[in-house]
Length: 592
Image 1 (cartoon, rainbow, N blue to C red):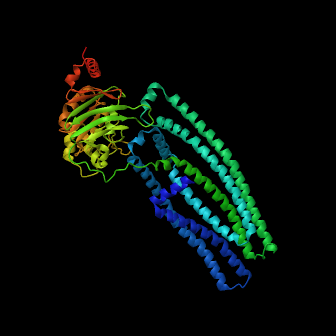
Image 2 (cartoon, helix red, strand yellow):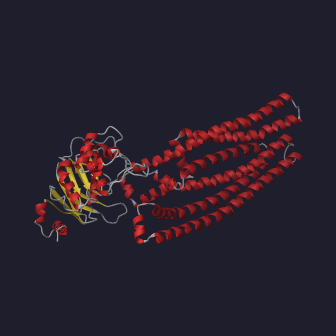
Image 3 (tube, one colour):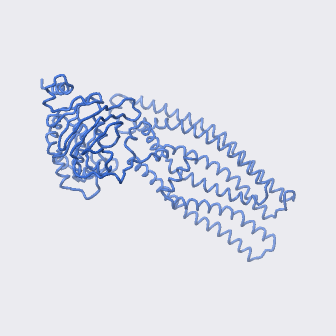
């Protein structure tokens, strides 16, 4: 129930007009049903009574107007609801996209929240849980409104019938509870299996792994796993349908018993005054019609409630993900103005979420404006973690990161981030044009600067080969004329993007040339000094080609600072990690 309330609040926040129309639609259907059972009673009583032609014409007109008018209004509303339902689902998908982009980055590296995000995405994309929940909510609201209206009509017969209907309703609720319990069990079992099935199915259908699948003959392993996972899904469905079948069977029995009880009671009231005054033929028609409709409505309402609980259970990961607090970008914090003059780590220790050991321990070093720093270390030493801390993706467990003598957490987030550019190891190229990938804005960009950067990173020849030049769009998934680039070319686009950011006083290049061959890497590094100009730069690389032109080299070993010195001084320390790494790599590039 809490999940449903949360969903309705979210839907109301997204589209209050749609929710009001849904409520009006439900009340309209209930009103139509009540008029359908009440107006024929008036007509029959008039036919058996005074037979006034004017009154008879009035009742016939009202019956026709009710049927035709309500149908017309309902069709108009249903059309609006159908269109708006799709928009609401789209808005709620967009809300999740915005949520992902606005929560603290630390959540996206927390295993629990990563799993929650995947389950939420699976629910809204694979199970259409948003659309199904909206539809189930509308149907349930309509069915319950109709049921309540008819019960109000039946209540005029006195307490005996109402007591019987309440007993039937309680028994129906007990059946719903059994079904709800089954659906919760089914949901908890099915989601992880579905996720596993989705992974292996997408692996088989996607293009990324096809080379390895063919080269190593992995097809039997993948198809076998898909088959076994599918068997697990079918087994869970079989158990669920068996349990739900028993409960829905009991619901049908209760529904029929309620109908039979209503028929018998109305019949007795028609021929006997034992429970009250005799009913007219018109009353008999009205109450019998009401009893039939109540029986049908009970079944529909029950099925609707079950379906609604099922869909909200599917939607639970989405609803939980939407409660994650967004990163607060405090407006009252000091705006970062001017240039980055100094950056200093003071005894910084950091541990990743759910990790047992810190990845960085008591890190301390200082850098001045315009210095070029090479960060060197073995895999897993914590080099990339330095980047994430500088970019405020995480907060240190202890210690401080100071820029211009002030803790970076005390600066206004947006103005601080405007001063930093970075190219990450897992950089992204988006399905936008080359121009948009570099400028990151839809319009108003500096074309001259973009073209200059394309020249400087060595992409001019490739761009000239393209019919649309910098307006060429990446990716063929959504554009038949879309382009593809090699890893090295894509990385050059990412470097140009980092250098385009006009206010950035610091450029961080995390493995900036990992996809390039040594010759191309050397060419890029030769231009780095002119590319970054007087900006402060951090170069993180396994290769040592960046170290020669850097002012200082920061050595990270086992999460601590092993050394921080110039290349020449470090090469004098023959027992140091840097000396061993540099010479080992140099040896690999020697010609035989």
